[in-house]
Length: 266
Image 1 (cartoon, rainbow, N blue to C red):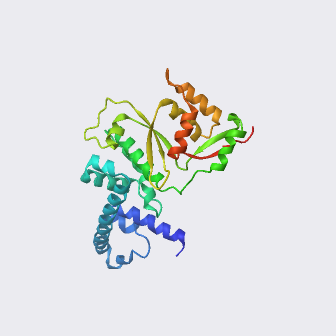
Image 2: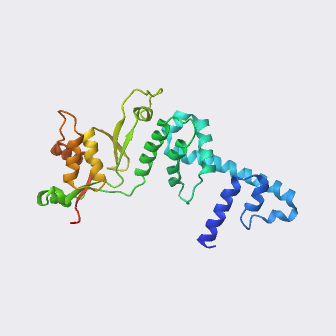
Image 3: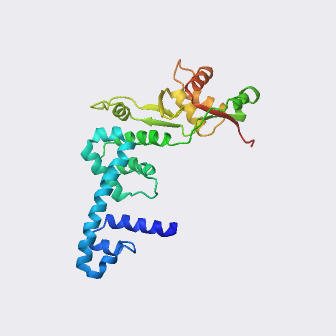
């Protein structure tokens, strides 16, 4: 069986799982419609039983898959509500590839689209998905030889590349408190800037000040070292100037850096 035919059958089965029993008869892929021979009523009854088994399995699978990626969200919502959310998400935004580890990417947007949803819940989901995704990235390591550029190239001509998969997120204080395990997240706390990177096999998180966040955001956007330094200085509050030497030492100690890279001349 070709990959295209297999994909068509999988998509047809997904549609049938969320359809009524009568609609499902026409949606089932070829090869699963043999029960039609006994008449429409019998076909509908047999398909209803079969599809119910598939649905129950899909419900369990949806809950299990998303629970692995969103453990804190599951704790906040409670097991029953989380399972209901997972099944609703499966029905409205089902998986589109065989790797179910990729499916959870739809959850933050799915939550944000729900009427009356607390705004910090999609943020919490976004943070957990960023952590989950980062831990699935290929391994990366510092290229120490590339750092020689820092002694030979001018700041406008090169950039510093953070570890593969590194991200910078801005979260409300409520979402951050929920991720830290607060039982009753407060709404009167300031937003936070978070760096996510993976020096080893687990994702790490670091709270950043405004100037550090501006500097690292510029690097993640591929801007030159000079542009990143300018961004950091513009974001520095009074008496809190950005110290590149201190930052570089921390970057090497914490494993934030991947390499230095020359930029294309314009």
